[in-house]
Length: 125
Image 1 (cartoon, one colour):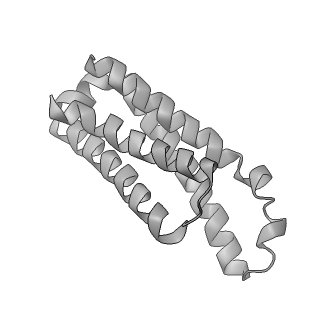
Image 2 (tube, helix red, strand yellow):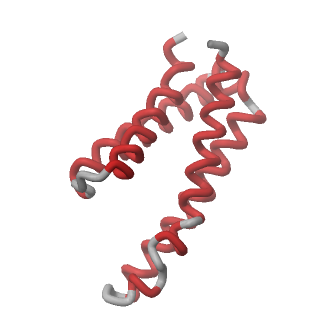
């Protein structure tokens, strides 16, 4: 598969996760369901989520707008490696903090593995 196609898939993966994270307020009933934690914890969780949305959009746009640079420059390859690492770490932490046996959780884990593979793929060629 061509590098441009892989990077298009990386962009779609990133945009999908941006949309997923934007839905957290509705999916998880925020901020109502966060009322039982401290104010700083509520703030940190929601702020970190907004920042993740920003990162996913920025990465997705980078994959669409700069595919050649990502695939061939040292900085681009470092960014791809960082994103592959991001998804690999996210996969690992899934088994530490979200040990729930449910098909949706397994689907989410597979999506994280997919992200690690997609972002690493251009580095192998």
